[in-house]
Length: 370
Image (cartoon, rainbow, N blue to C red; front, side, top):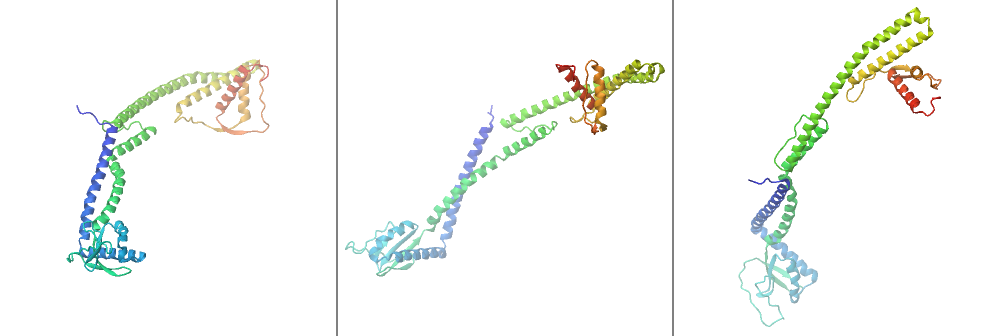
């Protein structure tokens, strides 16, 4: 069975491919460069211009140093620095100097032996002026060698620069897949759990995508279960609220009827008790309505029916409720003399004040003064 190639193996292959592509480019361009240089310098006009330039540079070198024909050996420095230029200098038919390694020069005055040079004219003759005499010289300029080395250095730098480009081109598929996964993960973070995670290949990225898709399915199932549970809770609250609303409305209506009767109105004690019953029934009805409003929450926000109410009245209602619940505990509220009208949900604010006072009564060490 063929072994699956993992992500690390693919990266190694991409590196090898990039290195091989860079090497092929370097070798191919070296061949092209060599052919192009040979074609260029094979032109007679080109070769002649190049040789004339070298003659001028050599003459400038001789002039700057004031060389004579007896200092001919000092041309070695220029010959070494200009290795692509081969030349032979003659004094008439006697050779004074040769940069060509196959021709041994015989310097005047060094030995009593002279060597004559054949008279074939395979290259044009040029004149060189020394401080003591003029000489003739044959030149040959190897432009291919002169530029090929520099060209190869430039091509080597270019091949190194192309390596990351080849690596990028070979890894485009992986990069596109990573970007695709990144976009799908961001969609999951935004709450889109219906779009499946794309699974490509069989490497580590594919395993990661499989795990992410499993996580997506789990989250979607949890959301569905939470939505079902929330719907059941809302349904239960709605049913309970309707079941409680009917008897509370009946109690409040009966209390109103009793308060209008002469028998109850004639007894202050009975009227106070009936009013308390009606107030508590109205408070419970308001609480049931608040409980029912929980089912209307959307995105964590509970809709409120705010209206301008006087804070002193709401606080006073809360104080009356506390006094009925704790008749033995004297409770008083000190409010500002300024009348404050604030946008509020009166029943909710009243419930908040009552809860605060109840906690104070139950957790206070001294219940005589609150």
